[in-house]
Image 1 (cartoon, helix red, strand yellow):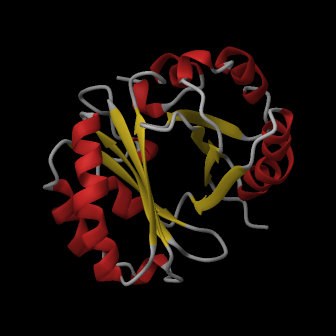
Image 2 (image 1 turned 120 degrees about the vertical axis):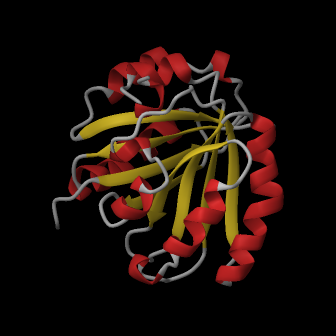
Length: 212
């Protein structure tokens, strides 16, 4: 198994305001997970789901996390869960062009919202027209950055975006992104998350979004 930086997306099927989440306890466990470089907590807008966007130093440690630790965490609170693995290296050039904090950029302000997207397409990232798409994305109101995603095993393209407000994030997810997915020709997933309530918890796990 190739040793490469790998992104992990998770979401738990529950309704729990972030203020009620035992994130301090969970963070202490996460800090001991092999290969974990950082995590950005995700708190669902509207449904109060809980999740995260993680960076692991290798595909092996990321795989162990999604097949070992995380299912146990979900089972311990009795809820179903979603996990996704993404190549953390192949999207570097496209992500750097979008001011991605996961490839060294620093934001001028703290994010107030995140959008996660995943398009159901089996398309190697080299065939994704990101050079055409990035200028359009940069023109979207309130966008601060995007980390491009390319799923392991199935090559679904997607992204984790930071926005300056929940309103702009929702506008992007509800109005713009469906047109992008239609152009690509795939079914899609969008999620909108609150970027303010997770700041302290994410900073404790070295999230690059909160390192101004």
